[in-house]
Amino acid sequence: MSTIDTAPGRLPVAGPAAVRRAVGRLLAADPGRASAVLLLYLFAAAFSVSVPILLGKVVDGIAADWTTGQVNLVCAVILACVCVQFVLSRLGRLAGYRFGERAAARLRESVVERVLSLPLVRVERAGRGDLGTRTASDVNVVADMLRDNGPTVATLVIEVVVLYAATFVASPPLGLVALVTLPPLYLAARRYLRRAAPAFLEQRAAMSEAAETVGASGAGARTVESLSMQQERRVLGYARGQSMMDRMLRVVRLQTDFFTVLLMINRGQLLIVTLAAGIWYFQGGLTLGTAIAAITVTVRIANPTNGVMTQLGEFQQGAAALARIEGVNLVPAESRDAWPADAELRMDAVTFGYGDGPDVLHGLSLHPVRGERLVVVGPSGAGKSTIARLLAGIDRPRSGSATLGGVPVYDIGVEELRRHVVLVTQEHYVFTASLRDNLILAAPDATDDLLEAALRRVDARWALDEGLDAMLGDEHRRLTTAEAQQIALARVVIADPDVVILDEATAGIDPASAGRVEAALAAALAGRTVIAIAHQLQAARSADRIAVVEGGRIAEAGTHGELLAAGGVYAGLWHAWQGD
Ligand code: ADP
Image (cartoon, rainbow, N blue to C red; front, side):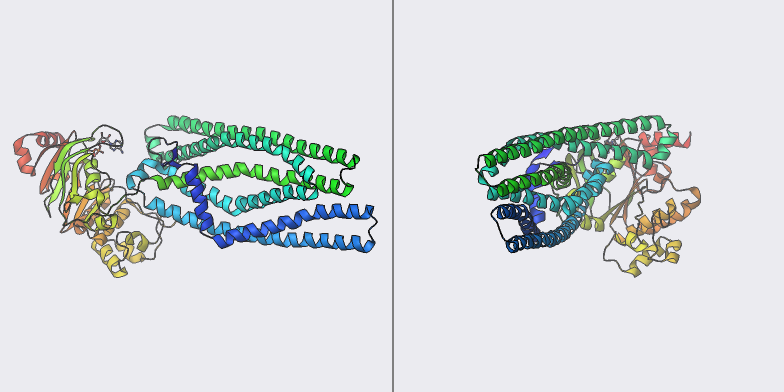
């Protein structure tokens, strides 16, 4: 596996070999169209270069006293060549566009599929900027390359090769002379590409970072405002913007240097060929027609060569973008194929920490009893939400086990897991989609009747009134927190799991809606094992059992009465909360 870069958390970037394989895959997926493009351009170029060669023949023919008829015939052939070249290159362009469009569509689909199958933890760690850049702008860059630059460069390369071949046809010695500029051209291009490759990668990474910073400042605007962090965010945003600009300037500088060298090489080539042709002509080594044909062909070499070189930069950007897209593939696939024997969820001697950080849970064990309402309480930062994440299979313990029905929760396929365990947090995401699509996430096969029954169960009358086809999401209908929560709870009812884990699920609800949401919650949870992470002790009082977490360990467990009688941590928290 070859990778370049990667800041902590960022998804990997594929190496050149993987990028080449990806290009091969894109070509191989549509071999008929790819070869049609190539052949059409090859013939178009052949017809195009026959024009100067035939013109050379006309010049020599006139010198050799051709009749007007002979000259007219060759001129007619030249005209025919131009027409055929025009038609073939148009057809090639069309085929190139079609090929590019299809390849871009395939790429888009496969990227979305891959990102959706990434482990959730990797998605969280990668951040919105990195994922957004890869799935949107990187895919666009590659799609443009496939649609535009790819076919264009294919044409230009073919044209360059055919033109060089044509100088040999016109005059083998002059053909050889024209080749002298190839080594310096190759060296200049190699030097440019070596420097440009990392520069483009850095530029794109800087763009992700800038997007991430600005996006996060926007998304968290209220928090930024309430903590008076505007200045810090501005400074950070400015710094990231500045670093993006610096990297862009570096790319521009590299390009300018390269094109200056390129111009000198082109002019040099023309000068050498013209001098050689002139000298040979005056020495009687070649005819005027041949000299003119060879010089005209050489003049034409500069254009497509420059075109290819200009596109090298685009290709480099495309390759950098493709390297980042392919990098998503390098994230090790998860084999989540374990099947739980029953619905018993438990944690045994679990040690866990985030990333490379220190342990935040230390040998913690928790055994919820089926059908009970277990409330987990403890001070902030004790590890309560972390317990929820491990029980829901989002993270894997460093040691010890979190199991459902005897198998590690993390190894159970997401669809199977959803039938047993559902985590509800205070983030109730509503997608920009119909109400039906928002609900069906929980069970793709659910019928409309089932969806409506779930809405009735959580008393979401507004949703029933608006109907399953109603469009939700910010640009259609912005839901209140309480409404979004009802959707989340309806999803629980639809998924019908054995165990529901609530992590501060009712936090952020305004008191006016609290009663309705509590009722919806009770309806959604009836008959299930409930593990509720509570940050307010009030919720603990009515629990079947309370587990008190402190410093990543279970400090004590029991009913409200038992824990008060024991006079331990819980009793202390309770009295403090009561204001005793
Ligand atoms: P609680 O829910 O009890 O407030 P958490 O489970 O959220 O506590 O956090 C336990 C510890 O893990 C804390 O020290 C917290 O800073 C750390 N932590 C939580 N989430 C992350 C994360 N995504 N990355 C790194 N550390 C984290």
